[in-house]
Length: 219
Image 1 (cartoon, rainbow, N blue to C red):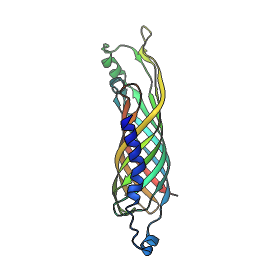
Image 2: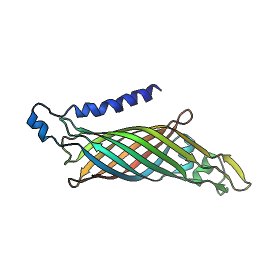
Image 3: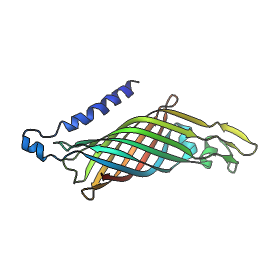
Image 4: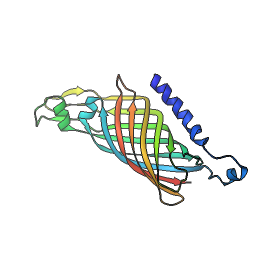
């Protein structure tokens, strides 16, 4: 609970910190400041199951994609912030070999299972270390929101035996990551990034990593 409280404080405080770096020493400089902009965000990449152990062992890498809308603030002396509302879908494939190994089953044992799904809706803050939106710049992200996890029933085909029941839950989630912006024109920017995602489930939670990229289009 303490970590969630600190994370929330950081998310609320970081946008004002970066925004306060904007030079406001003169009216002329204020008038010349780059205005904030609204953007459409779309991204895709790869999903890597991480924790708990049964999630990591019994599922394997697959795709993810998502998008949303963002408001990018004016650049300051250090950088600028961006606040966005993002929806994302993460898919993981069932690993038959991993399932056999995790349950000490002989090679060739008939097993069954299906892909696992994770859906998120999050409010994200992005801090960009760059005084211009026209140059390549690194950034960090922090997000909090809702996470829905759906893992399938898994077991043996012969004899028909259920070893893991279907598991679904909707819970609190948060994410953090690093990336790099690569502006292409004044109206769209490409980016690459990696994120760590945690869903608060059980004692340790379900964790996964995401690596990919996307595009931000100025509205």
